[in-house]
Image 1 (cartoon, rainbow, N blue to C red):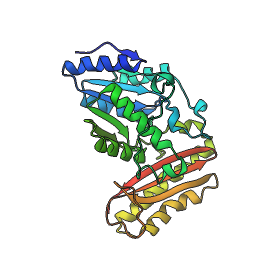
Image 2: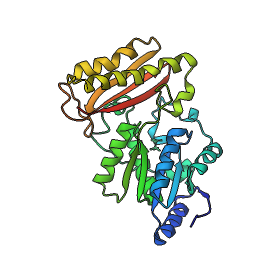
Image 3: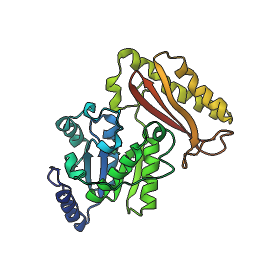
Length: 286
Ligand code: PAF
């Protein structure tokens, strides 16, 4: 039976509603987001819809995952527009708390996934993943899901959340949805809206680099240096692009693969186009 759509703002009220639904035997899925929804988020909602009786979308621009030089106030916010997109995709409930409800004065407890949070985006954005793990843990406690759905574009985030769930014994299944791309290969991201037409064109170098590396691996190449060089080449050829990192790492532990690709690896990159930082990745299986 369909439940009436509602937007919750208070953690305790949201949790009480989910406790009722769980008592009725409903299977709950949560899709955590920071809003600014695009097709990539809607794919997460559709995946959740197919797997659960009740789908909860959370929209919360989480201050603790922004660094001091990152502009939290500039992050796009359009709750009404987001809900108008998410409802036809299949959400039943939304949780959109104010910051004060999630971080009351004196809040000082953080979840850290010590090693997985260090490399890649963690090196460029210190504290980011502690903010992510903490808010996701809180959202899990508030929405009490059986299933939570995340995108594979934030590969490191997904690895961290999976590890947190395992290490802290959350009884939650984590599902992931592959990266959704524009027809020309650009990975969908809320940040694409910041790109000029020239930067948007130059940004295609990221997916070209990943495709070139993947083609080499399919052709039998195993040298990590050669694979990484193939991915770097199209990006370095773009004068508008500046590589933050581009690395081949173990697909589960995120440890560096510097010699030969003999196990699944993730080729992960962050590239600046002006002040806009884009990320992309591909899992390479030898
Ligand atoms: O991927 C995001 O949008 C955010 O990092 C998340 C998981 C919603 C936590 O704020």
